[in-house]
Image 1 (cartoon, rainbow, N blue to C red):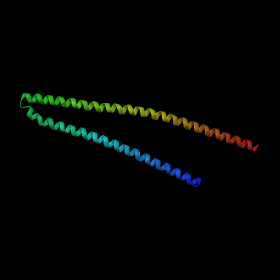
Image 2 (image 1 turned 30 degrees about the vertical axis):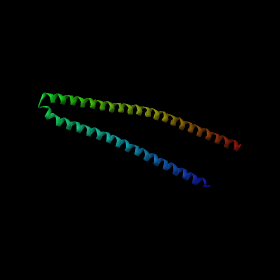
Image 3 (image 1 turned 120 degrees about the vertical axis):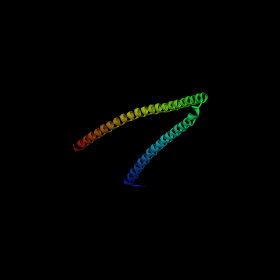
Image 4 (image 1 turned 90 degrees about the horizontal axis):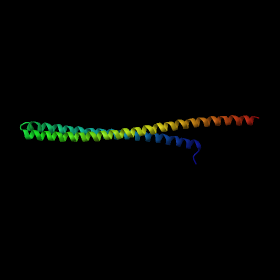
Length: 142
């Protein structure tokens, strides 16, 4: 069986390893979030470039007669409605994330309150233990 100091050393090392793993996990999550954000940005920029190239390619041809000009206007209206849908999806996602952030902030505040209560109880317990120890010493000295 390991001695008490060895057990304490093992416990301390396990705590250090746990903190390292937690730190690495948070870092990995940040990288995943950044990757997802950059991937979404790339997708939107690529789509925007495609739309602009399409408009540029159709513009000069469309200006030659009235029918093609009307077709270009319909095509632009479709592009506009697609962009509005994409904007709505992004806005909905933002609202969902903001709601999630609000919930997380409320949980964090609640946990901080519980932590403060815990520390207050521990302090009170330590004070009572200290007082009990003083009384015990007093009784032993009599």
